[in-house]
Length: 213
Image (cartoon, rainbow, N blue to C red; front, side, top):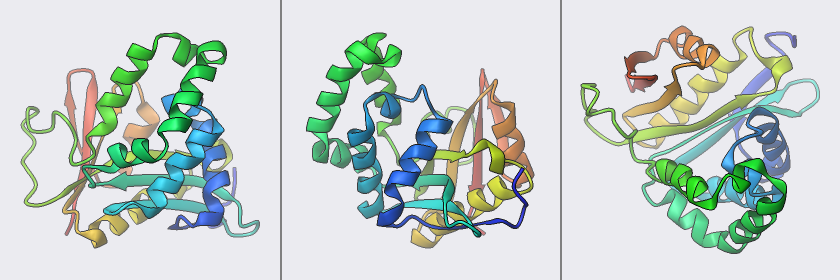
């Protein structure tokens, strides 16, 4: 495992895009965006870089300068609509190629579109109000992704990255950063608990959130 002080968080820069895409594809090999191909995936992170009310943080190895982790969140309600508009041709090509190369896409474009529909809403987290979680008194940012190369997990690296990303979203005006953790994702659940986030189980998943102090 990498030394705990060998990596530090910072904001995403344009020159990081290729490395972030590589880390994403390693951490989330079955993700829809991974399945739509490299060109679309690069376009997705390029859109995040310039999107309003959105921040992507990376974890950089202090010795090598390599990006080894990332976290991204947004409270821009038009984020995915704008991103898909900008990259529609890449998404269509990725879906076409994926029909022949990707089990995720071959499983049916209708299923893939349903999965996409569940993440289109970035302003808040769907279902938090029905779960009885007290409402926030301002914008709620949704944590979209957090991922890290396996050799850098542990030693507080993920907590530092998560905290840094949340602080950047708070600085933009969010009063809460929230996400959803599947019930079988124990490592992620432990991460949020160690970071001091609120955790509430509802059905087969957990809602996690931190409020601005």
